[in-house]
Length: 419
Image 1 (tube, rainbow, N blue to C red):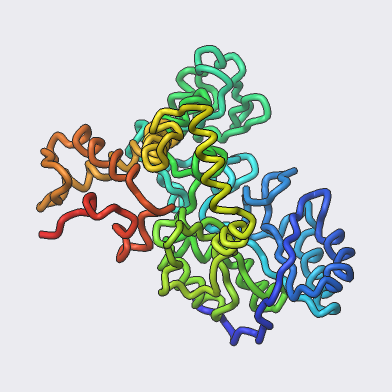
Image 2 (cartoon, rainbow, N blue to C red):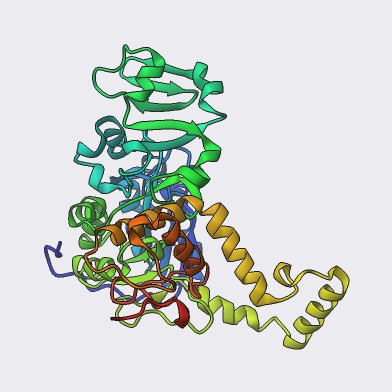
């Protein structure tokens, strides 16, 4: 997608003031605060996500419709009115966008509703990062308060909808009159106990938050559908810049940011990139910088006396006598914590990565060599033995920056050997 007209000249932000929009603080309330905010000397207002979100959401990162400005905030007219008021006081608008995920709320998310009703044949199936080869080709829905056998009495067919308390799911065409056990078995999804999300989930989520489902913005069609409204607001001068939420979750951050740069005509953009100590923002990213976590770390350091920190650590160790991997030694504690996350909180994601690795091994005419020899024809357990320690050893928040940098976060002893 390319911009349809030359981008308007927009002042570069020099200081921003973030506003957390919500039903109790909509666009109109933000507009009333503009005179005061302008008196502070900021150049732009930084707005939390403005697109349609789950009703009542207090943060707006659970988007359900990219084509609409959120009704509860005042809709598109409310946003345009806020923009006019801001400009009257010399301010611009920077808007937060969420390319990585949407709300896993089918009754509000029409695209997801269609996928659950029609399965992988739905035109919206390409939107979501679902592993259809797992769970028997069904989307696991961890929404039940207990095992399905205990909760089945609360699952009720209502016409072409399956209801469970305040949840609603579409029924596959022609299945509404089936007995409940057969009806459940006939769907493209499987409602299960919420505790199973940790180990059984087959869609990408935001960290361990199963209520958010990963979106495949690397697909050009999905990018266009999920960015059309924001791009129009940019072209028309309603907003001036973008803050990109969680680019680390994307399959190809490099490609996404290049495509966004082209589509926006190079508007001012910053990314919520978490940088480890000594890590630098990829030079190839066409962005103005990060949202400032790295700068804040340095600012916070001004209030930390290294000598005092050492004394506190010494007192803690003498008082608590922690084991080396439970606070006694930093590196050992980091390794244990990483292994805990990989094998517990993100067990489902580790299993998916193992499945992907296994598929690559079994279909490759020249299976890659790794840390230890693996028989890739029987490689599920073997791949797991490599995936778990490798991911636990990553030294940065994400181990890749697009395809070209996919091993950049690996310690040298775990990087794949070249032929």
